[in-house]
Amino acid sequence: MTRSRDGQQKNRCSIPNEVKDIVLFPPQRPDRPWGPSSLLSSGYLGLSPLGPSGRDPSQCAVDMSKGNKFVDPIDVLYEYAPPPHKTRLEALRDFFYNSEEGSCLGRTPKLWLRVFVFYLFFYIGLAAFWAACMWGLLNTINEDTPTYTLDSSIIGSSPGLASRPVPPEGRESILTYSQVKKSWLSSSDWLPSVDEFLQEYQTTVNNSKECNYTSGRDDENMVCDVDINSWGDCKPNGTFIPNVCMFFKINKIFEWKPDYYKDLESLPQEMPEDLKNVINDTFYLFPAAKNKVWLSCEGRNQDDQQHLGTIKYYPEQGFPGYYFPFRNQIGFRSPIVAMRILEPKRKSSISLLNQASIAVLSCFT
Image (cartoon, rainbow, N blue to C red; front, side):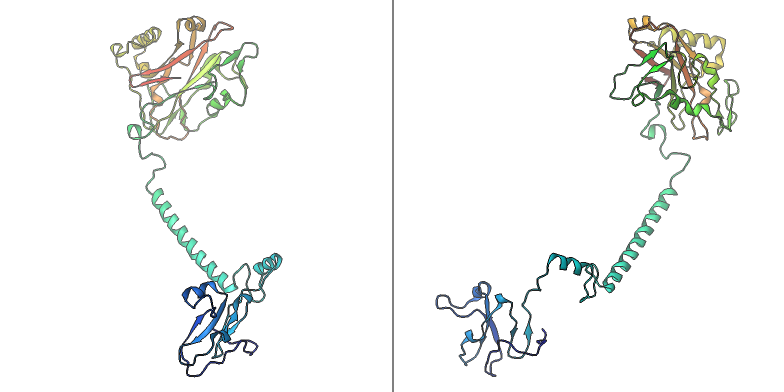
């Protein structure tokens, strides 16, 4: 409650001094008595003495719908007038800077300082909480060893067999090789490049060493070199493969070791006969070389086998066991087996079945 700025008293009512209590009410109407509902429905306010004076209350009625100010008998001003009307341009101007209130964007400099200080401490606390959580997380993670490995991990202990070239999912699984262009016919937007698949094998690794079945690996942190010169006729030559070749490798799984066949009796019955013959010769001629992941590719049906012709593997028909296990060594590269189809029947469609055969691994592509 404030007093009138101009010092004038408007709409004064002369009420006896002995009246101490007053109530607000609408002016009396012949067709409607005074009551609580009249206070809400009427556009007028007035004063009624609670005493024996019997003054006419309509003398103090003021029309509040016109935005007037009402002054009570003790010179107290009640503000009921709505704020002055502003145009959109004036409201926008006052929002950016109000010269009367000294505010900018709806806040005074003091309020802006309070907001700034609040959010400053809020984000400092939030950053400190995030840093504490990140510190705790990084101290519980080993950068070289995953927390869960093999069967305790989502990946499991059965690696997949990757091959190139191969069309992506959602496309028809047909690869066409041109004898004229000496390359796989493909569109660069859907067929992965063989060069990209083999790119890591065309660089030299400092800590790599040439390994063999006899010596194996002297140090677990050492990596065995993959020699692309051992791929024979399937060695990449620029941007194309000079022959009908496909490349295979085993996906890396931390700490995974192959479970090798110990004798010929442990070979599964569904294993292809030509692979059984190769394993049999290896067991007798070079027993140390039996510790490998054997690879076999053949036609899915009899027609495919006839159209496929002879297959040759480089450097050998399997992945040597001395490359494993993978322990996140720097420069580690999975061994590659290159497969060349020597005399495929021209203008024919051939369906291949590729199988990596070890005691605990059976992968198809």
